[in-house]
Length: 542
Image 1 (cartoon, rainbow, N blue to C red):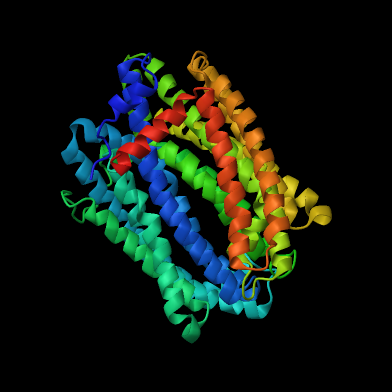
Image 2: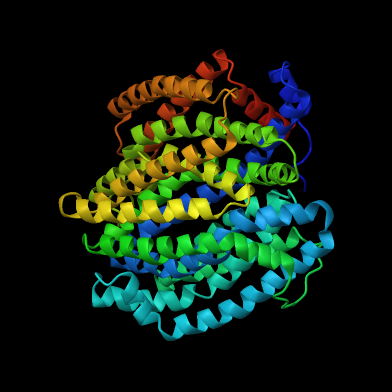
């Protein structure tokens, strides 16, 4: 299924004065972002189901701490290897080859998949043999019983690293081909695997059912990507001299150096520090992180991946002597769309944090104190969310220009400051020192990356960025007041003693606030609202 179908006519009706090519591209980006966001919505809903089931069945104690740490190894290795390369090098390189050199593109993908299989088979064997030592390295502050359980779960989860990385290679290829549907829904299958396996087997094997589900989900999402590449010509091939492989390695080397610091040092130390704040600290951090990632995935990730292939093509033309104007215009469109969506999402989630955590997690073994700690952790995380969303698009802009060194160096610098801030605040702020430090990191990274990019592009004046941001802030402020008032009214009227009441306390203020926000932006004639509405209408066939 292709998402390249034009919605130019609908977009033109929103802004008839816009140049046709510009409006057409903006509409394509909005539609691609909509497809990715739809996949993210389904994935996040299933993810919430997963987290709710986990909270209900296992609470926030040692078993969940063990499972959380056991998931780190496959996810960290994915981030370190292919995950970090998808946007930084795979999509830019694949996008260029997809234009005119399809045969070379298939050969390059075959080589990458072959290398992944060979390298990760050895890695999996090593971790299986030394699981207790890996568990101690990641959470030495945990008790002996938790460490032993972590090692057992790790032996179940680590084979997933192979399927996660193969999925990453195929997803990068599909994004470059602008086949957004299959990678957009991969994470949904991943979460579905965990949910189904947990419900089926938790009575027999406890939290090991979640670990088994993680492995099953990794296999399912890999299978989905293969369905999207039925025309691919792939075979086992180890040709290290391929020029495309050299280009990917050149682009990815700075990224992997930065990720080595962030994943193997910063993230490891973060979990170690969380383990020292008492049992449950890792679980509260993980629950809050997941909720914070909901709007980030729906907005920043969707828009960034939708924009990246187009940015990569514009950057390639610029390197061949073309103007940078098209690149600037596309980046500005992405930034405006992110601003319009992430600002209200942050404000609304901050105000509704406590009833949201209560609704989603507070059942079974997840107690009111767990809700309190998770809520406070989430609100500290949200302080950095808008900067993280904008920063992701800045990073993708560097990647599209095949500059991976600059964001990698910025990342190393801000991660050093993050660790220093967290360690400095730990004695007085405890677990929350990690969230405060993370928000500071997001702010600093966005400011530095944005300033460098702004200077290199000669600014982004004339694209309406500051007007859009100002309007979004004003409308979001009004939305926040409306949502807060509605939340208080619903709590006073219905309380929070039943599931229906909890749904009303979250749903009614959320919908009311969203209506206020959309209404104000429509009155102020913000183009992005019209484009999104047009994309939705076309998607639904209206």
